[in-house]
Image 1 (cartoon, rainbow, N blue to C red):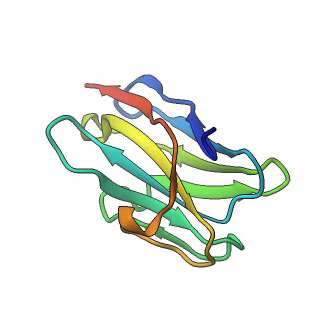
Image 2: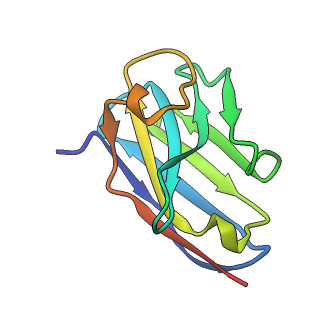
Length: 121
């Protein structure tokens, strides 16, 4: 059984917004969001520490995306605003039993199945 699962993807026009959710089967610790477009490598998008006190963003999304967490709901959110066609990708959340923010896929132990985000021009 997967430890985290994503939801909230869909089709949106450029300039629109989506909120992705990463729900844990229990308490979740450090979480990262990654994305992978066709014929491209998986890339870091955003990360949040165990406490929520530290966040980190890829340069391409900084100022447009916000990562946050609700530990009562065992959920981490990725609010995506001002979406662009180049944001189109499968978005994955990942989790690791650790404290800080991590930007490499190899830093994470648990992955969701991914959710498709498509931004039309």
